[in-house]
Image 1 (cartoon, helix red, strand yellow):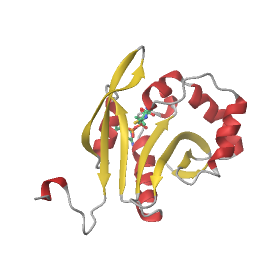
Image 2: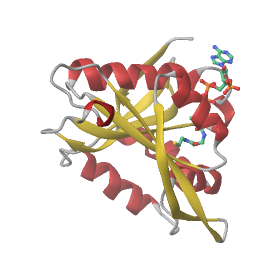
Image 3: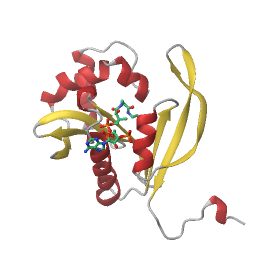
Length: 175
Ligand SMILES: CC(C)(COP(=O)(O)OP(=O)(O)OC[C@H]1O[C@@H](n2cnc3c(N)ncnc32)[C@H](O)[C@@H]1OP(=O)(O)O)[C@@H](O)C(=O)NCCC(=O)NCCS
């Protein structure tokens, strides 16, 4: 399976609008809840190039857009970012998410110099938890009643992945 990550282009907007309007994807990613239109999608796309604290990329499989990966809330001083992904429902369970996310990690660490990625995973999203476990994210804690999902408040797991670095004082090392 030949995958690459590339910039979003205007031709992708029909597909991204479908994903951003998909209730199940929104439920699992904490995405937009209000109805969205082509105009909203175009505004989202136009904003991408001005935004210096996020990098959103299309997962491309042989010329077909099959998902999105992203780095959000990039802190260029602490060199951290929140990471996330979604794979088109028709392409799930075929290794796309694992491969694309490991490419995103490589890009974050080796091209952007980020040293910590963290992600929010709503309780019950076992596929995403397993994927993050596989790629070296550790479970760091739970944000209680943090999202409103299916008519109820839901806990959200926080997972994180730090690259080894010199001069880091961790909680367990503190006097
Ligand atoms: C979570 C999500 C991103 C996973 O993406 P995916 O492409 O389905 O993930 P993968 O295919 O890489 O992994 C799923 C399974 O396929 C298996 N797999 C991995 N490589 C494979 C391959 N080459 N061929 C077949 N199966 C493979 C994995 O072992 C994995 O099994 P497991 O989870 O039972 O251990 C996807 O389900 C999704 O988009 N969900 C909705 C949005 C979402 O939850 N996003 C994350 C928010 S934090």
